[in-house]
Length: 196
Image 1 (cartoon, helix red, strand yellow):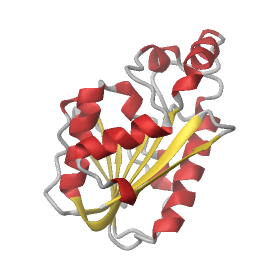
Image 2: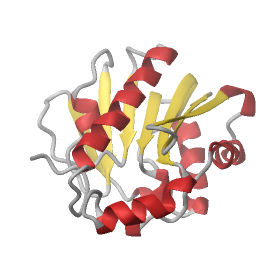
Image 3: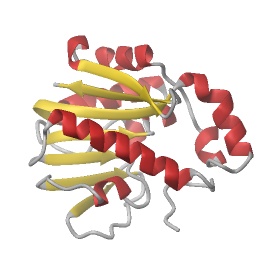
Image 4: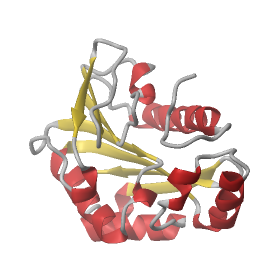
């Protein structure tokens, strides 16, 4: 079985695939195919990028260099907790952060979002998924039942609502009118698209 997270959780892989499906549906809405897509905190294996087509360049970034099973994906090892993405300005069409922002402090998340804005082309998009803050107790319980990774849940720094996620992106420099949010998985997770 492919390990998508640190720690063990019986539902980790199915939940990852549900996040990926949501992100792919959002990609269809923005029509940013053909350029470069970057998946932040892509995990040990960049599963989201592996099934993705239509981009000229795919880059997976994680704290340890991901293992890539597909030749057209570039992998980069970088400590994203610094808030710095090791890519040049104005070089990317789409950035994704799927179940990542909750793992860093709000200040680091804001720096990360500012850096995403730096690397995105004009007209680019930042796609985010994150657990809704109202799921804190549920996630804790699921981690104790070994359905989701205890290591991952125990390191959550901040959980968001659609409003607080929007505010984080506005504070980072995205324009409020260019941000769309919603929920999925029966309201347990938030999706967001922020356009430049």
